[in-house]
Structure formats: structure tokens, C-alpha cells
Image (tube, rainbow, N blue to C red; front, side, top):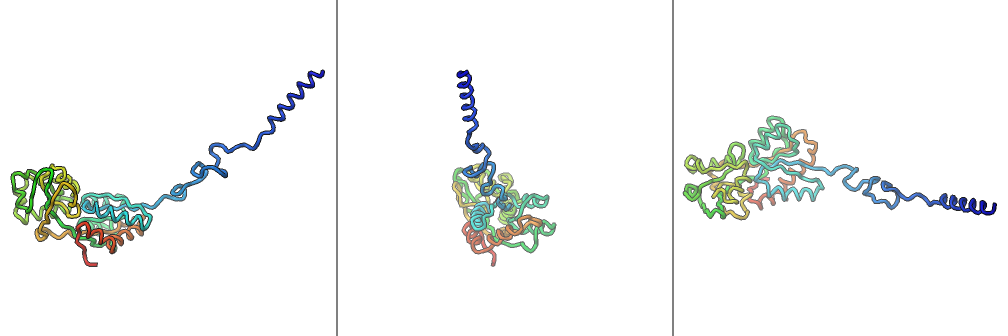
Length: 280
């Protein structure tokens, strides 16, 4: 009898001990005090509070270096991220006309901007001429070439001459006009290599795949080429225009970016990269 009482007492003590658990600890998805705020319960900056604003700019390839710098300035001043799509102005205009999600268009001439304004794709009151482009004759150091004037392109040592496609690139059209004015266009036909845009034309020269070519001054200060200015009287002035895309959900930011480009800070950057400046 005594033995049964001892066993029963032992069982009761074990049961009492099991029932005296402390409060349950936080589970893996718990977001109570002391939990990592990055876990399931809380949002960190840029999360559930709303995504950061982004501005999409379609820009002519000659703006690559200058706009990268202006875009960084804009992000610093506004907190708005700028995404650039660089290409030949004609190609970019076609994409915008077909509904590409772009907020602002900066072309290498005025004709593509004016065409899109007429089509209702750009806001006419936002049109601004922001820069004047210049053409240079570039020679490839890798290829061992040296062209100081356009007639040097006839030299048999220069096998390939790179320009942007005149069909949709304003600088390509200016290159053709310059060669036509110099009486060289027909003679150079067998040598011509057309880039999809001026950046590609420049790459042909940098790599030595073309011994020489005509490219924008704004891109010419790079390794592996030398360059001289092309007489501006040989081609139609390259007035470069921009405008805000009609219906942009980021119209206010696009207008602000345009103001930066055409204001004192933007003009200083553009001038540093070799652009001429229109009257303010």
C-alpha cells in the first residue's frame, strides 16, 4: 500500500512540473518586440511604403556621357532615379510613336521632336532646343591611321570609314552632308561602314575595325582615337531639341529634368562635353 502511494506521488510531481512551462517564445514569423523588423511583420524603407519614383528618358546616343552626369545630378537633387535609353534619334522617335513607356525625349536634332509634336506624342509647350552638336573627323590609333582633313579619307591606307546610319541618325545625316559638300560622298561609298548609331560608329574606330570616321565631338574624348573638327559650314547645324512625352505619368519630374538640362547646371555639363549652347 505504501509503495503504491509513493508511485502515485511521483506521477503527480512529474505532471505538475510539465504544467509549469513558461510563456511560449516567439515563433520564426513573430514580429513582436525584439524581432528583426526586416522579417515578415514589418516593411523596411522602399518596401510596402511605396516604390521609389523612376524617370525614363530616351536620349540620342551623342548624349551618353553628358546625360549620365546630368542624370546623377538629378537623382542627387530630387531622389528620383533616371533610367536612360540611348539610341539613334529616328529609332527612338519610332518607339515613342508606337507607345514606348518614355517620359522625356531628347533628340540629336529638331526634326524628330517636331514630327512627334505634330503626331500628338509630345507636349508642344515643353519643346526646347538645349544644345548645338558638332562633328569631328576621328582616326583610329589602333589602326595606325591619321586623317587631318576629309580628303585624307581617300588615302588607300584608310580602308573603312565609319559614320552613323544617315537614315535615322542626325549625325549620320550631317556626316553625309559634309562628305557631299566636300565632293567625297560618291568616291567613299566602297569604304563606308554604317553604325546603327553614333556610339557604334565610334566603337568601329576605337577598335580599329574602321581606320577613320565622322562622329560627335561629345563622344570623341576617349582612348584610342585622335580627332579634328569638321568645318561646320559643310553640314546643316545640329540643333538638338527635347520635349516631354504626352500622357507621361511622371510629367512633373520630366519637366523638372528638362529644366535641369536647360538650366545653368545642365548647360555647364553640356558645354564641357563639347556642345554649343543656344541662347537662354
